[in-house]
Length: 73
Image (cartoon, rainbow, N blue to C red):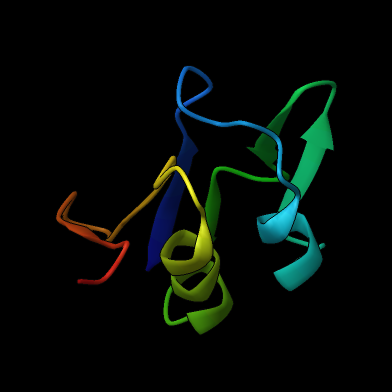
């Protein structure tokens, strides 16, 4: 099972907080962050942590069934 990562480039301000928290999951690509891979093994809490700390809430984490699980409230 996998999770799906998405960064909304229209919301991302390129703070780099996600890449600092999980450099193997996120990278800065010019002015915005992007996932290194859109699909990751499930239960990688670093993806949820990155979604939680994003100042613009630009990161979405979805489970294998497509339910949004991050950012957490």
